[in-house]
Length: 269
Image 1 (cartoon, rainbow, N blue to C red):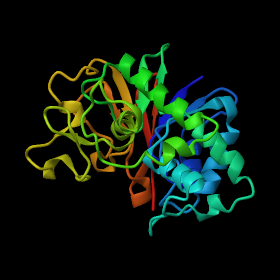
Image 2 (cartoon, one colour):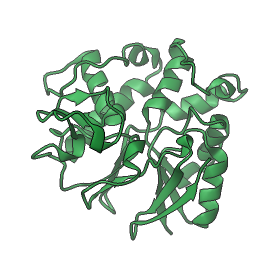
Image 3 (cartoon, helix red, strand yellow):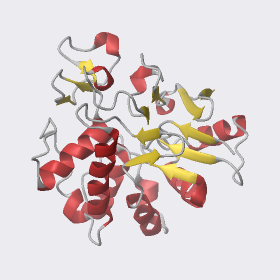
Image 4 (cartoon, helix red, strand yellow):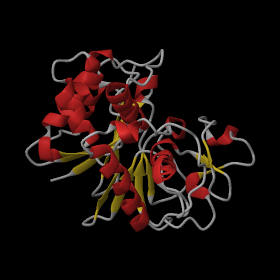
């Protein structure tokens, strides 16, 4: 049995199937982990959701910002963006089943047996991995309650921009979501900057990648993440695994086999 972690698919179903063919995925023995952003921008988000859901126990998914956006659009009529490609899901006969399944996926996954933590974007520098698991569970409980609209209606916003144990209510949950699903760069004190999305080489001088914040509390943990396509799968740390390699932008889709950290990629576009 092998476990493969796969970067942001974003509706690129055909490319996902080509990648699974490359790694010779065996649904009877192997397990697929997905770093989030299963949907949006690509042309076949509906097919991606159906395929992954039907994998049953052979998959692990963490939610990304595009997945949460889809849930907000469906449950609260949040506004669609001009470049969204979610219509096929929103009009599918099985949309209620698919989206109910999606909202029951975790925000963070930790596998005690192999020591890997997987999250879509990153972890607040102040969080230990154990604290991050506890905080992610708070969001999951809110999203999985009988009426998810209570959470989803207050999910959007860029503030609070720094974690504090004293945060409460919607501010607390929003801050957790932003670190887990939108994080790229921080100020040295851990405050999030959500405006810059490009390569590290071009970043503002007062910002640093979240994983380079001095004395990061989770620096000794093995962390798998996606979201930041401009990294092209590369970081400067041996226990940090960036897997979004920009498939939806015509670059590549990447899988990493956890047992030996071997990477497999197929060209997209």
